[in-house]
Every structure is written in C-alpha cells, then in structure tokens.
Image 1 (tube, rainbow, N blue to C red):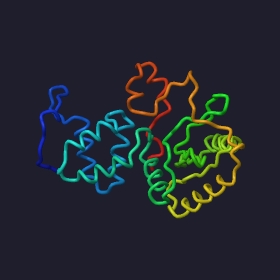
Image 2 (cartoon, rainbow, N blue to C red):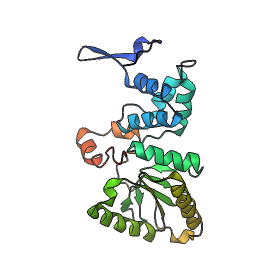
Image 3 (spheres, helix red, strand yellow):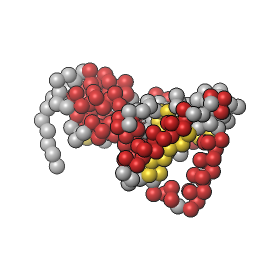
Length: 236
C-alpha cells in the first residue's frame, strides 16, 4: 500500500455507508497525475468516462482548479488525448497508436455508422470519417469459429459501403499494424466519393449514447437496453 500526503479540499470528499471517500473526479485526477505515462493517464480517464464516473468537461474544470499540483501537466496532456466513448483499455492503446505514432486521424471511438437510408450498419472500434477508414481491434475471441464467421460478414458489409477496413490484432508488433494502416489510407484515397454509401447522420429514431452526458440522461430501462453491448472487451 502506498501513502501520499497532499492537499484535500472539503469539496473533494464524500461519504458512502459512513466511509469517507474522495469524489470520482478527485480520484480519477489523482490516478492520472501519478500514472507512469501519459498513455496510462489517458486509459484511466477513458475508462472512467466509460463508466460515466466523470466527463471530460468535469476533468478539465478539476485540472484548471489544481494548478501547481504534482503531475498536473501530465493530466492536462492526457485530457487532450482522451475520449468519452472508448469501450476498453485495448481500444485506448489502439487509438493512441493510430493517432500518436502514425499521426493519422483524428478518429472517433465507437461511432454508429448508417447507410444512406438511415439503417444502422455497424459501430466500429475506431473510425476516421474524413478518410473513411474503419479500425477494428481483434482480441482472442475474434479467432473463435462463430465470431470469425460474423467478422467475415462484417468485412463484406464494410467494403460494400465504400469503407476501408484495417484490423489491429492483439499481441502483434505495432510496426506490422502501422504498415497496414498506411496502406488502408492509401486505398481509401483512391476510392471515388460516389462509392461512399454511408453517413454518420443519425436518424430521428436513434438514441445517441456517445457522450457521458447522453448516457447519464438515459432512464434506467433505456440504459439497460441501449448499453448492453458495451463491455470492457478485448482488454488483452
């Protein structure tokens, strides 16, 4: 167990079942400030947003009110790289490799994509809407027979609608993925705009859940129904 001694403001405390705890915002900021790397700090924040414990705006306000604290620069840097709709730690690393190392993007996390008639096509792990490049993280379960069949069908759907697919396989060397990523961008540039049969425009019947605020606003029955497919998947 590690002990730290630093300022603790009254507004950073709460009680749960008679036990004094620090608030979610204070706790997340603490973990970000003391994380080993900026990437680790991004994972902390992204997963806190995944669980709707904090929003990026709440963390931004907390950072602004903590100037001069240990690690606050790292927390501020991580905030610039964070997203509210990542679904797993592996996806966070995937995104940072794509945007930070390859310097491509920016990308959206788990955005719903529709055909031109408003039918939901897919919700990919990552998506560059300018280039039309879809990114999927392939964890171990993707190599099971049933899942692989579904993935093949999904690949056909993606390409039939004028999207380019690139996959990141769990455990592979980053260089291999980066080569495939740049090839996917090169192919996407050769695709005529007329071939793109997809849109990010959500139909009126769609209930958005991409932000912390949107998810917090859901009534319990809708939250259970709409967020059932969100899980901390592919953590390896």
